[in-house]
Length: 376
Ligand code: HEC
Ligand code: HEC
Image 1 (cartoon, rainbow, N blue to C red):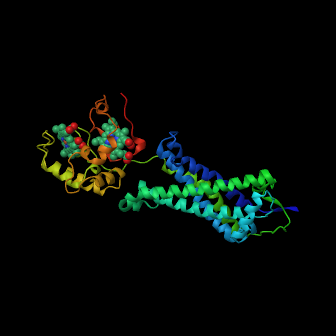
Image 2 (cartoon, rainbow, N blue to C red; image 1 turned 30 degrees about the vertical axis):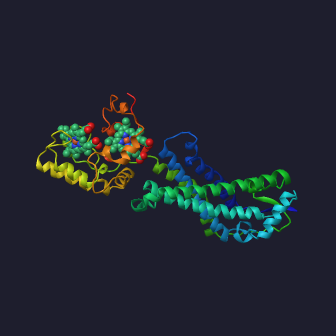
Image 3 (cartoon, protein in one colour; image 1 turned 120 degrees about the vertical axis):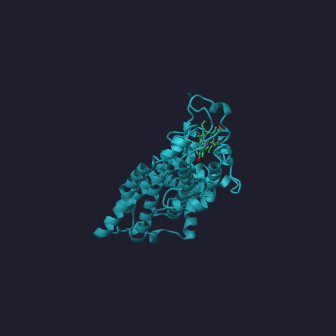
């Protein structure tokens, strides 16, 4: 036996980058939060999860390309996928017999295939979840019509991620078995690229275009992570332009509520009777009234993609919408844990002073990361 080159540089970069990025996506999924560990705010975490998820996706696309036109041992055609061989391999493992495979052994062949398949499906389902749940990303247009399916899609995404994790754990167990019991040196081989073998070394004279494409693909995930994480960690409040007459007239007695907090019908009913406005007289001149009503109706809840608006609309009876935001079932549900006495705190004063706890509420944005209940 002599030492021959088995794993080319691109395959090794692929392998170890995939290890790092899959670990990152797992850590930044809700796992830590589930155990009550809350290191950074949720949106930053999510941005990093999306960034590393995209990186995993690009790596897997590279691997498919490499499986078709890479060097011998990286090709799909060199994988040992016969069930017979797989059973023989496990027999050998149980009996502690050392086997020698230059490229992927049968178990590693199946792991590679399953990791690519579950990995790609997990990434794709993640993009769908990002669109359905957050109204963001490539598939954000799905949000308006399919948001109710986001729960099911999240479960599917989670299931695929666990399937991937299962295969990875199996693969690591196999590698440890080979390394500890048989000292086959396969971990070192994935670092140096070299393995002891009876087979003859197969040179791989790749042309310049293939080299360029493969290195670009296998290295680009590093930039994808930086780009996606950086461009997403802070969410801009909605670019809502609030007419000054609205702030002046409707922000005199309480905060000027964002129009996407109530449906059109509620605003129309409210504007039709300002004389008896929750017991107060809020009458204004006709020109101002017209301008305000137009602004409220145009930006009402049913015309907004904001998560809160969509959930508000879904929780009310469209024929009889409430006049109060605080009468909307979804609002009540979200604030049921807040004690009445909290609202009476110094700077809050009232539960309709949304802006005391929701930084961007005047613009109709109610992101979790922007919620803070003032203590004073
Ligand atoms: C003269 C003072 C005054 C003015 C001006 C005023 N409001 Fe009000 N508004 C009130 C009072 C009082 C309440 C009831 C507050 C409470 O129950 O805590 C209220 C409640 C509301 C609520 C319900 C809040 C909730 O969810 O409980 C909305 C929505 C609202 N006002 C919108 C408007 C709009 C739109 C305008 C401008 C056309 C406006 N208000 C102008 C006094 C005013
Ligand atoms: C005393 C502070 C406080 C006030 C005042 C308050 N909220 Fe909240 N709100 C919260 C907290 C805390 C949560 C998070 C509840 C949770 O996720 O369990 C929340 C959640 C929400 C959510 C759901 C956000 C999401 O997507 O998860 C919406 C929408 C919302 N509030 C709207 C309003 C509106 C509109 C008003 C004013 C009429 C208001 N809130 C007043 C504290 C407040």
